[in-house]
Image 1: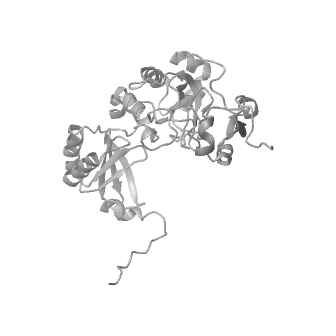
Image 2: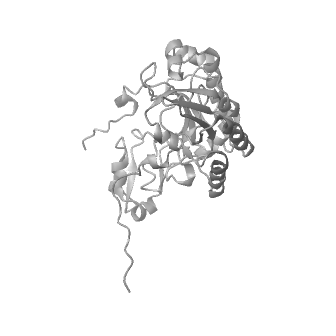
Image 3: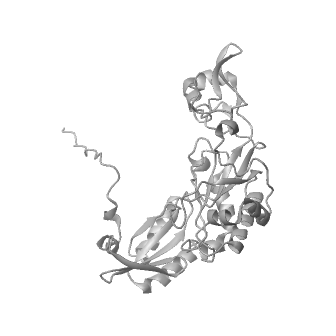
Length: 358
């Protein structure tokens, strides 16, 4: 019996996204005259040829079960001409070609528990890392922090009354996969890993672990007659990068794994250059399931910015204008010498350089 012919793999990268676009978006690509926002959560695009498209944006969770995805697809089929797209911040957008379809679509989304908003000068949906579901190095459940915080900021997502757009992110380790944001919550390990020397030889590929350390704080060692590893604690910056290739180097700890808050990061070139975040709060308890201390600190920063910033100032622009001393006065956050470091003195701060010759 002849074997069935297998489809040849196409090594050409991701599929062409144009085949998935709403027909009016594909037709008018690069040919838009203007756009506006009739209400929070709704975008209205008008093409030079007269075509109009309304986009309704709703917030979703980062990790979704198949039933939620089917529910969203059913809403798209019934109310939105069958076209959706996900944004990089875990929002979902539905495109329609008639203003009359916007109201029923918004009503159905709100009824189904998906808040409509996140456009214009609002608090965006929080971009966050995978957390315990997928990642091999998390110090906390990033999804849980997002849920607790967005419960408190629900109205700020649905309204457009901030001075400018506010991007938030969370990262469940110091590698910061959540990226730059106006306000970021990042796990902060405060103690070097604790090594189980009995398991290292059988579990870890020691050269890979040594190479993984960004500050060369790990070196091979012989402990109790067994091949193992040792840490130079003066060099270690407690990043946790050694844990994935070597689980016996346990760094997560209910007492010493904390949360830190960073502010002022942005990727945009609008009105000012891109900026890196700087740490403004450290040592906050990793206190699930609601993380009240983290939520309180974030709201202090957010509402001080909302009350004092000028129109169209991003978080970094506001801080640049008022200065860091006034920032800490207005937010009532305690200041220490370890905060708002710009990392220009990395050799002194990290006690080592990545350019190390053994």
